[in-house]
Image 1 (cartoon, one colour):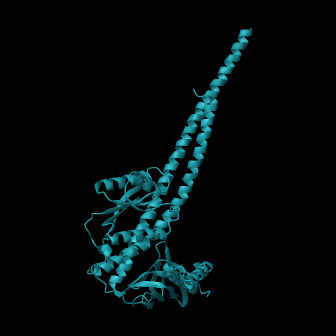
Image 2 (tube, rainbow over the protein chains, first blue to last red; image 1 turned 180 degrees about the horizontal axis):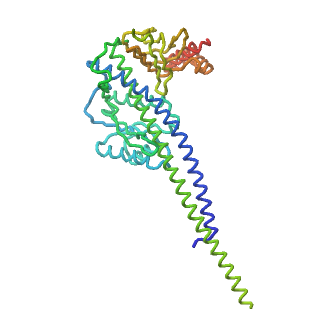
Length: 285
Length: 135
């Protein structure tokens, strides 16, 4: 049986761990709320750009652009979005596993966003064409722009024939779903049926549709990357919050158990002492 | 009678900047400024760096814009801007600094690779200052 001193020391150490997990949980909760707001704020723009793109491509079926070209997928690229830090439950592991499965099915190169994914695949000798780490909590649009431009450049140069985004979709603080999405070549979104119907509107284009498309497509890529970044970030915080919340609970449970044993040990010591005193007194008689 | 307003939505990737019905909008289009009144024909246009003006009940709201797209259809003007700031949100101090920096870079041509970038930065700074109405 552990001595009272050992028990006290363990309780103290668990308590300080609990304080850390509790603080991390609270920080994650605050950040989660912020990044959820960001996801919501980014939605209108993403929706609108999709709408405009759908209209532009459906009304001008003749238009062509390098980013729309479908090529034989000889060089596939996976853009993996992970977190920079651990202690967030299965968040990084789940998305890395998904990416490893994709690479197993159809080998290709990678673009790593986030330290965890980069380290994992670099250690195993995968071909990482580009990496973006230490992006922080803010996730300004500028980063998505940079990533988008990098991908577009590679695609136009023919380094990649197909690009997939591998990220985590945020459903709630409890559920995050690893998701794979085809980013390039761009598959023009189809117009929502029923909403605008089959009525095609005769737009005035300024400049002409081809040039507009050349502007719009990279922006569409950037917006899609941005959305994936925000979703992943929210997922990371959600996962971290859940993980840290259960860690805090586990710590409480352990403290309770240890306190119980500590009290038992103390009681036993007191009982032993009393019986010793009584025994000693009896021996004198 | 059809609606006498045109609904103006200004959105950036990060947020919605403006969303209200208005009487008249002036938009910095890629081929010159465009005035959009209610019942305008459907149009899709690229945007330039410049100042967008929304006029509503005689009151004018200015928004500094740096590139993007816009679509007008069915009395709705959707402006997809790369960045957009309302006059009261503009950091004048920062914009002035940016303008000076850009002007310096353009003046001494040592940064020869970044001339295009410096020019863009200058135009953005000027648009911000114009929109803020302080200059």
